[in-house]
Image (cartoon, rainbow, N blue to C red):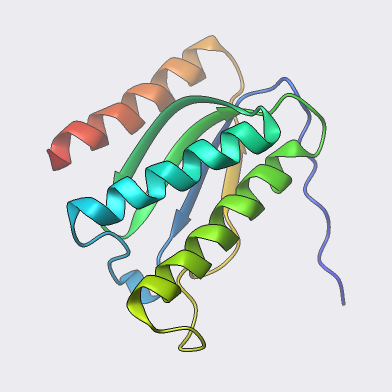
Length: 131
């Protein structure tokens, strides 16, 4: 059975996150974070999705994004996670040895300005807790 498509309206703001499989680290050294940031930049260029905030943590990440077109959120995040997974495995010579992420990304619609500020603070605060 096919899974239902996500309803993601362009122009709205979403919090997006994804976690590593079995809570294992996906970012172990500074170069791992830098590699993901390069992939994130590529994903933004491919779709014109606006990145409003982000935080990379050892076993997961959070993004505050605003897709421009309807359906763009899935295209953006799908490409981001697939490309990151492929490059992660290639770098570690572990292709075919299991999943990097525990599942599909999760996304939450930002309801209003106060919700946006709250989510952005949370994302940015997590970023500085790790520094």
